[in-house]
Amino acid sequence: MTTSPLPLIIDCDPGIDDAVMLMIAFMSPKLDVRAITTVAGNVPLRLTSRNARMICERMGRSGVPVYAGCPRPMLRKPVTAEDFHGESGIEGIEIFAPKAPLAPGHGVGELIARLSAAAPASQTVILSGPMTNLAAALVMAPEIASKIGHLVVMAGGDRIGGNITPFAEFNVFADPHAAAIVFDAGIRTTVLSLDVTHTVRSEPERVASLRKIAGPEAEMMADLLAAGNRLEARWKNGQMAPMHDPSTVVYLLAPEIFEAKPCRVSVVTRPGAEFGRTKVKDTKRGPHHWVTSADADAFFAVIEDLLKARA
Ligand code: BDR
Ligand code: CA
Image (cartoon, rainbow, N blue to C red; front, top):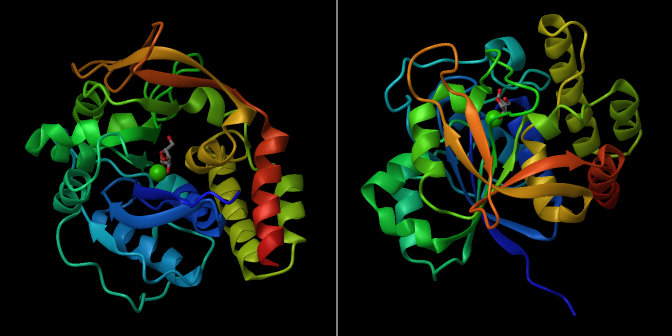
């Protein structure tokens, strides 16, 4: 029996690892990326919006609409992460002007329109950047929360602390007020945090084995991962880059290779050392699920299989 691909909305801020995530989503026959919304994060909105369209074009998916969303966070001053992604936001691939223009309309309006029109609990949404767009959509139209059956986010850290401050992870730190709104909305949410992404890194031998696979996608992914590694190593004592955002899509494709626990996540929004910290309280039923571990070899096997199928 063949099941139809899972329709998906992706909200992102490409970003090297967002770009890798989009590639994986596009390659999988199990997923149907219906729309991409972009947000200011790793680099300003103008660049995240261009970068998303570049990846669509390089993957032969220029038909997927890309809507630009919020150009700044809710309340705090904007922060970016060029140190880890390069000035373009996706160091490692050649920059060009995508043929497809941005889709008309605002990303937040588009989230509201698509979710409003959907059946209850029918939509799967990924957030791989600051959560500004969905938070704004939830403020404007709170009823859309009930349309999301599964929200999958790359956000936060618990056991191992943060990556941008000792306590905070970048996506939450870049807009903690938005993250608080999203986590408060009662939506069933799977959280891929630093606790798990720091255990799945693009070690050189893994990148080398992806590079051996024939085809332009394998080469492009290896180039992106190698660039991510160079930047990570420069700022983080020689460490290789964690597979942050790709973990959202790999989770959807192979949840069995992860372990998770039900919990409730809250966000520290008061100014101070813990600004942007996620706090995880164990619960019986969620609504959040905090991913606690991943099988890193199986994770890369998922990606390798998709690249081999395209070679
Ligand atoms: C997150 O921050 C960004 O720099 C990455 O794209 C990822 O979404 C990791 O903390
Ligand atoms: Ca990101």
